[in-house]
Image (tube, rainbow, N blue to C red; front, side, top):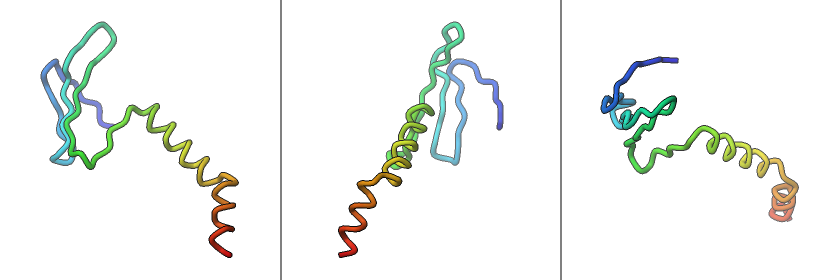
Length: 73
């Protein structure tokens, strides 16, 4: 993991097209802004993990098996 120190208004650039800027510092919270192309999904980690869990559950569900059986006929 790369750890960087940034002050309010400073930014980092990832892969030439994603910019992360420190917008505000308030107590122990940091507000950041993320500029990325539309085709690059940006999620909070807890949301991303929930999406991954739901996708995995859908892949393992009985309804998927039933659908596969339906198309085999």
